[in-house]
Every structure is written in structure tokens, then in C-alpha cells.
Amino acid sequence: MKANASGTCFHHIRRKTDSESVSPGSNPGRPSKSTCAKTVSSNRDLYLLSATSHPNIWGYRLPGRTPASQAGEEGSNPSNPIFLYLTRLKLLIPGIHLVICLCRRKIDGLRWVGLSVEQSQEKKCPTCERVYGPDLEYCPFDGGMLAAPAVPGARPQQSGYSVGQTVADKYTILSTPKVGRLSAVYKARDVQANRVVAFKVLHAEHKNDRGINTRFQNEGYLLSSLTHPHIISIHDFGITKEGTQFMALKYIEGMSLLDLMKQDKKVEPRRMGVLFSQICDGLSAVHQLMKIHGAIYPHHLMLTPTGSADIVTIIDFSRSQSLGVKQEDPPELDYFGDATKGILYASPEHMTGDALDDRSDIYSLGCILYEALTGVAPFEGLNGVEIRQKHLAKKPLPPSTVTPGVRLPQYVDAVILKALEKSPDKRHQTIEKFSRDFRTAMAG
Image 1: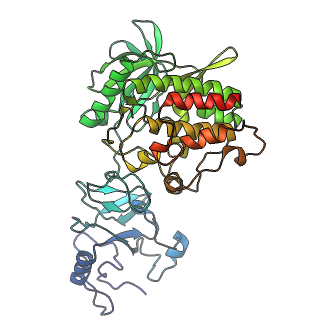
Image 2: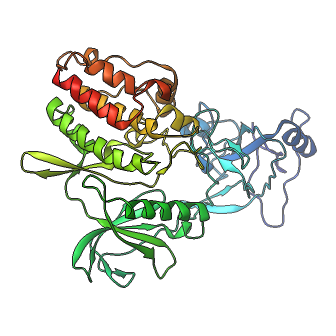
């Protein structure tokens, strides 16, 4: 059906001249402009306008339609460059403030009508695109971490130091950074001490965030109080001329345990036993200070080859906190990205936001030990949400039954499964006990 000359409210809207205005159509089978407005208000429905030839504006695609099928919809007209179609997204919060504006923008030489949503304190799920109020941290539908909707065309402001640049008057950047959500890590040279360091600096966009800065400071304080062969050492920390916090850490040569697990699939049991013992020694030093690491994942365990053995160094204490303290902010788990970055190894209490203690680190290390010996994570799934549910409710299979080709001593199953108990009270109560039990089981 072809759109009439005046256009139709929220149904077919054609490009108008500056002197024209969009008015309700006269077709009695379609709602008037005032009716549409009442429907939006009463049902809390957000109507998103998507151009036929650009079906993924704002990340939405009309359900069950491809660009080719949309182009053949009724009302399409080759002589008219744009036809708008309607899709509806249910919003779960009342009173959302919407500003619907018809604006002309150019995308690949095409003009289209966009929808602007004013969301001063709202948060949006990056996966399902649902919008919530400021109090929620995770999407209740799919577990995605909520974030403020990005402003179209805006880019996050990061540190952005270039190779050869000198920062904080003494650190010369030697390589492009490894960029994380909150900070970036550069290989740099301390020109005063004449040594290579790992230069970790917060993104400029976070320099005024009190919570993030406090966490960064606490990481520096903790590392300054730890001197241990299996824990990353800190040389310096302070504030750059741009006002962002930094720390200079020992630069670790080698690969991570994650790299080794990807390379060899399974780690030889005796080799893993040596690595496990070193990890436990490092965590013991942390726990004795009444702190936890909070993010014991394979990519946070660096391996430096030295002759016939590897030296383990535990890195990234950004999630460290005091024992038994309820988490001040939600766990940074990527439910829809790379599962190896956390969701495969996080404890149940970590996922639910409950108080954490050293037994959370024990659970995470148990997950790593399980996967390193068998080549299979204790809980796997099609996505992070499924993995999360298994962490919370499913009992893992004994490691010896997962990969029959791997020969493990008789009591290793019991030791690892105890570390993976859902209740912290049923796990090994200290990292020292976990280390002793595993060593005894491997000897048997």
C-alpha cells in the first residue's frame, strides 16, 4: 500500500521538505497521532523507526526481515529514497523520558529519520538493548552488564600514548598497549632506572571517577606491601601530568597459563603440580594480609621459563579486596564475550555479588586446575548465561571421567571436586589446605 501525500503517523513517514510537516493520516484503519502518543505512554512501548535501506539503525533489525524482504514491503517506491517501518520494543520501566525527534542524517549517502532517546541516568543492555533505571547493574533477562547508552559518534577517551613518547617525565613508551576496560598496559622503559617496566595507566575517561581511582590506588598499596617471588612487583605509582593514575610494574617475559592451555590443550599433571604449588604460595601471601586476589583466571598467571621449570607470577590485582567484605561493585564478567576472561572460573558468590573471602580464590583455582588437567572446563555452555547457571546449580563431572585418556591419581578427583563445591563452607577452608591435599593426592 502506498503512503498518502501527507504521510501517516508512526507508520509510513516519507522525507518532507523543510516547509512541510508530518500530520496524521486520514486512514481510519490506522491510529491518529494522539492515539499513538497515548499508546506509547500507557503501554511504555518505544517505537523505533528504521529505514528500509538501512535496517540496523541503532542496532535494531526488524524481526524476521532481511534488507531484501524489507525492500519488497508494501509502500516501497524506487522514486522515494526512504520508507520507514515500525518495530516495537517493550520497556520495563515506567516514566521513561523520551524525546522523539525527526532529524535528517546522512549514512552512506542516504538520508534517514532517526530516533533520539534522552537517557540521562538510564542503563542499557548491550545484548538485548533493553533499557533500565540507574539502580540495576545486570540485565535480568540475559545477564549482560548494563552501561549508559553510547552517544552516537562518541568514542571512549583513552590514554593514547604513542611509541617513543615520554610519560611522567621518566617512562618512554616502547610498544602499543594492551587495552582493558579501565586501563591500558604499555611496555615502557624507566629512563632513570634504565629498566623495562609494564606501565599501567587508567584511561583518561576515568580520571574523575572516585570509585575506580580508589580501586587503582588500593591495588598499588597492596602490591607495595607484598614482596613475593610469585607476585608481580611494583616499582612506582603516581599521577601523570594529564591527571590519570599510573603504576610501573615488573615486566614479565613469557606466556600466560591461558596461552599454555590453548597451545597444549592439556598440561602434563606433574608440570601442573609444580605450577599449582607456586600459585598457592603466592595466594597464601595475599590471604595472610586478609586480602583476596578476586580474579584468579589463567590469563592472570604468567609463566617465565627458567631451565626445566616455569616460574609463575600472579598479576592484575585490580579486583582485590578485604576478606569477607561484600563486593562494592558488580563483578566484571563478560557473559557474551570471551568466556576465558572470567566467566569460566568465577565463583558462585562472585557472580551473585555476595561477600567474598579466600575460598572464592580457591574455587577459581579449582576451575583452572580442572581444565588444565583435562582440557575441558568444569562448566561449559553455548553462552555465558548458561555457564553461569551451571556454576550456580550443576555439579561437575569427576575430572578422570571427562577425558579417559588422561591418567590421574585416584584421589585427585575428590580434591578438585571439593574445591568446586557451591557452598564455600564445603570447600577447602584455606589455600594451604588445598595445596597440601592436592600434593598428597598426586603422590598417591
